[in-house]
Image 1 (cartoon, one colour):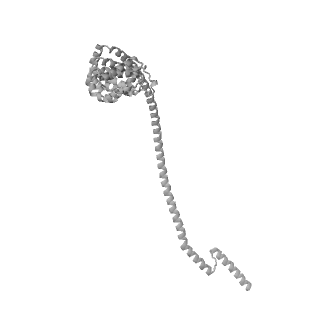
Image 2: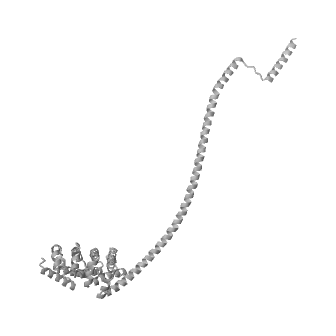
Length: 341
């Protein structure tokens, strides 16, 4: 019986084990089950919070990252478009630069050619002017020729241009006197103009014309005589002084030039010139002033104070006979006019 029960129990145990296996039933203790249940419930409460928080934060970061990427893509696209735009502008600017460079090179070549042509024309005009003025200087010694010149409607314009030309020449003189070439075409041109003025002023009709219609020329010559350094452009100085002397023969002309505030300071300045011929013509001009009573009476006080008598005495002992004689005559004239010597 016992064996039968044991056999039945074994059979029942095996059957139960089979049944448990088939139904996936596990025997656990009640306390363990309660503890397991508690832990499951705790995990059920805590896990969603932890998991949901991480997931939400991840999703937020992902959204932010996607937004940033989209913005960066837009910015990158904009930068690419800007780059293309600036590249196109750069290419256009380079093309314009090359075009302007070519145009500038062409313009520079044209300018050089124009300068060369202008220089050639200037040289031609100077050469032609020198030749014409030299010829006109020669024929202006004829009274009829001078009358024809003064009768022309261009006479006033001619003397105005003559003054401008002489002024331009003097302004362009080099500081180094030794480098002055008075034999050049330009110098001959200016000397020719000064010679023409001198010849015209030698005639009564010419003096009258210059005093009435070309006072600017007279002022210009007096100014230029003061601008030229001692020993410089002697021929031009002599011709200008001769012109002023010829004008001084006309009483109205003498009054005009002598009433210029710089007239006497100019004469004293020119008396220091190392060239004897310049000093000679200065003394002639001074003598012309003191021999005209009407002018002398008005100018005597100023002359007495500034007259460079020591220099005139020195010139009266010059080796140059003409200069010595004229200086001695001037001193005698001053004595006759009761000047204190």
